[in-house]
Length: 164
Image (cartoon, rainbow, N blue to C red; front, side, top):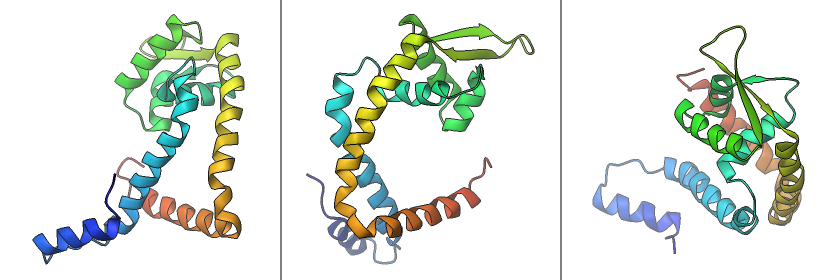
């Protein structure tokens, strides 16, 4: 069981009195939210034919108007090219995507989703969204405030992104 953030902050403050632990209020919450979100979706992912990282690759391919360059996919998702390459290899082995050398740049690989990959996304993604609707229903009227605050946080972090 995770300790409450206030207790974690208090422990750090006791050991390091000059340490500013205020970022933990936000960053710590983001990490906990991510962990709790993953746990809540785990039952759906355990029965899925693809892993969560593989699904993260299939979803943008599902609506791409044509082939997508693998390295652009990695950059857009903020995932290393090595990790993307490994996931794409597994997806290709199972027939969910096709990879071909780019006709424009032979160093690049173009990726397209197959009908089998599209079927996986179309079956799994709506179930994940339905579960997320259930999870977030408890926000009620606070939902818009949460979205606004998270949008602002994303803007602040994007402005500080060294890769932008």
